[in-house]
Length: 212
Image (tube, rainbow, N blue to C red; front, side):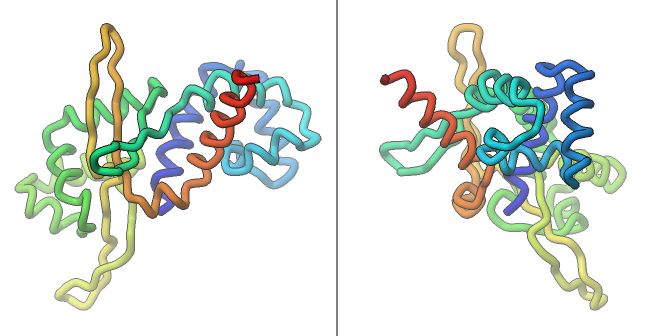
């Protein structure tokens, strides 16, 4: 499921634009375009990018040290063996909290966290009017909070897109003035995530460096 990586990259991109100057960002973008790449492609190939001949190694170091190292951690529940993502990125934390604070969005995501469904069925079962329902669904799709998982055949013989929530469970922890969000995602999505793999590798290297 690409949706997990999409929501992570979206949050990384928003944070990069705060940490990197507009001039440096345009420079990175231009160099990547010259090689047929987009900026978002960089995060799927980050270990490779660090060894590349591009002229923005200092910016890569900023991205690694200030963003990726502190983006999230992985935590396993000893009782259930569930693997949780502990979100440390402010943009992603705010996006998740904002989405769940909206009652209609929360109802939608709760409905499709385990079983995908088409938009008409989602709105019907959630008892949400079409006008606001389609607007909320489009927002969730744009924010990568829900993703497409395939097609379903309607009674008219047509095909409709199936949608599923990225998040299966969520926990909110309050520690002094800090709000920590923990999410549980589909195991298949977690196992296939290139971004999770990159972040895990960076954190493992950080731990080894600290130990030495």
